Image (tube, rainbow, N blue to C red):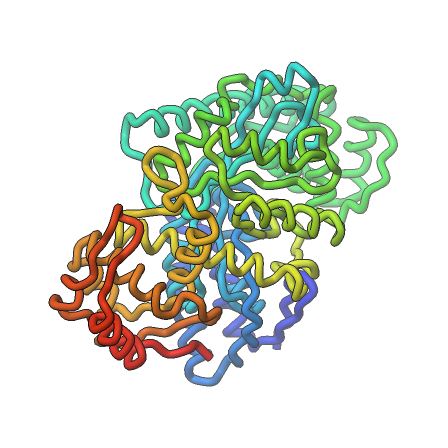
Amino acid sequence: MARIMRGNRVNIFPERIRMLISLLGEPEEDELNYTGKRKPMSRLEALKDLKRLEIEGIIAPPKKYGWVNVHIHTSESFSVFRSPTEAAWEAYRAGLEIFGINDHYTIAGHREFGEACKILGLKAVFSIEAIAMSEETKAKGKRYNDPKNPGRIYLCGKGVIQDLKPNSPGNNLLKTMRESLRRRYEEMTEKVNEIFKEIDPSLSLTFDDVLRCTPRGNVTERHVAQAAADLLRKKFPNNHDLKEFLRKLFGDIKIDLSSDENLQDLIRNELLKASGPAYVEEPAEAFPSPEKLVSLFREYGAIPTYPVLGNPITEKEADLNSLFDELENYGIFAIEVIPKRNTEERLKEILEAAEKRGFPVFNGTEHNIKSPQPLVDDLSKKADFLPIFKRGAYLILGHQFLSKYAGIGYIDSTGNLTFKDRDFGISFFSFIGRITWPDDVSEWLTNLGKENALKVALGLHLILGDKQCNWVVKPGFKLPNILLNAIKLRNKQTIQIDYKAREKLEDIVKTFFMVEK
């Protein structure tokens, strides 16, 4: 038997199952971090095998808690998760209902993540994260959600529904951002290599070593530290020798060298951070204005979102009403929180301010470090907060669904709210996100056309929207053409339906819609 620990949870599995679980994070042959080791199957194939073993009763199914987490990083940026597939498996085993990928500067993991979630029955949210810069705020020395860098703003695009078009403004902007950051990390790597060689000329750190820490070359500062740490581990397998080298480099050190994360953090903090000998100034072109980054997210069809830091309370976040006014001017009408970074009192304050403003709130855990942590923190489980986070997660699911089938998202083509009535918009999109559709109904909606699909969605919300529960649609659900024609769409936002048509719609809904158990 084998014991596998993830965060605060322990699973005990037979050796064969442990082997399958280990394959979930193994690099594939077309990835930069592939070691050449032959694999019996791909990550997704291993996941399908694990799910099959669960169906056959060999693996006990996880308990379902209905928790949500729509902000985690994977190996496509930097993470404890070695792949999107491994992240999905861990969320499934932890009992989550809705799970979201949110890598920096890339959506390369979205396809695999979506397939993995589909295999497991997880509801998947697709997002991206990047950093903007307010030069005016920087000049004033004021901070947003980066506690160390005035003017810098982390922003997310929640609910990505499409890739960027070649040569589009957003695609060109993202390319510029990534290329400028890559040049910075190349220079950092060169500096680290020179510093190492001064102590031991046999050491050689190249940027290819850094690239091999990633599947597709989306390098971060953390990957430079990881590659440097890996090189030292290989050169000095004995902790005594490693400690002697580090003492020559940094002086007296007091860290546990058995931890790879501790070694990486030491290198990052002492060499790569500002005032460190391998530090390289961050290029201005890597951080566009908030307006440009919001526009990029809109090209993805996503909901531009501001992650509220919470604690420490920065100058810009001290007055949430003023901050929210500013966000609206940028075209941002949603916020996100990482609850574990907050006190319960501060989190309550943030959520109350968002409720008054009519902003949906999303939650997550980041997981952009190498140490295992729970996928759901204690505050995200609390009865006072969980319904708010679930409503936000359902809203993104509804946004993804309606963008695909009805041609409308939470944000319209001009960057404004699709529904000016914010309470209705949150209610409508969250309601649609609570529905599980069978494949044949999804196909019917695809062939129905966007206007008729919107009629269906608005009609269902009219009948069921005030019932706060999840719905499962039986196969075969359709509305006859005569009923669709009786539903009149007004201003692409509301419907008009007569009494007889509404009765017919209610009868069909009663037949095909079941409350999810």
